[in-house]
Amino acid sequence: MLSAGTAFFAPAKYFRFKDPDLKITVVSEKELMVEAKTFAKNVEIRNKNDDLVLEDIFFDMDPGQRIIKVKRGQTDELNVRSVYDIH
Image (cartoon, rainbow, N blue to C red):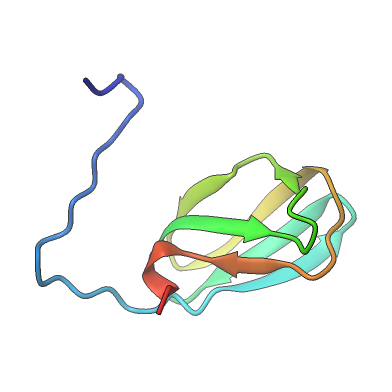
């Protein structure tokens, strides 16, 4: 059973998504900026120690830029990805 806040996403069997070409920039100690060229589903940001805590853990993103607030952790050696750019 799905809760009221859950959405199930199932693309067509032969649907192909474009690589969103995600980029991440450290704006300040408490803010990161993520950029995407196309729609990105389930964007994930991690650091080398895997101890980064953000305001959003997984989020969808339209083309453009989005600021994400850092709650805890170091912003060094960041990795950003989406389910659509896993090769």
